[in-house]
Length: 253
Ligand code: MN
Image: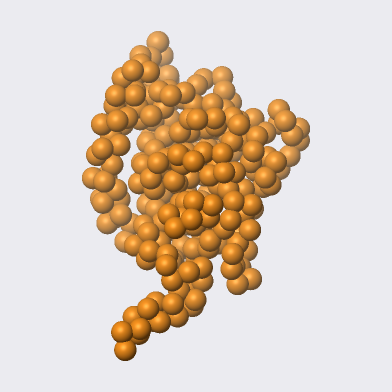
């Protein structure tokens, strides 16, 4: 009789499309919450995606099937290898741009979560003419520098999508060791050492772009956080990330 809970979990996992009963349901719930949070905060809309590295196997990732993120449930979370092949998609299609995630995890062992969005306020900064710089302590992580990936430079005329491993590797090269890279004419990628920090960074990248645009519109020189201020603020804010996370998570229910 003691096997019943495990059996029920395995049956639920199979029905839900989760690749293995060993996936922590709380982790999947947090990934689902991250999808909803990023919609509520104006980072994701009908497009964009958020993923986590599988803590059971660093060569696997968890990412929703192709779906508007507001609609994501636990049953929609698929497991992929780093070639972006789904382990068991049950006939469901994946995001065209899932390669962004797979190639970042392959190149960056420090990264545990990735957000790709069309974060609207960052678009003007994606031209590269005016760099995205930290306006306040909550966006101190931007002080590391925000590179811009211009798909046209390497690939000429495209549909602008990073929809294969070759394009994704070029994006990863632009990202380097940074937390954020802008994508010209498209959006951004934001990474973090945890799901909560990646979500936090994606949200404050968007709000920082808005406040920076306001400051630039006011005219005159803008004083940004220095590299040192940004680094110190980032350490403090990472330590406090669970406070807004719990709020955002509750608001997303
Ligand atoms: Mn996109």
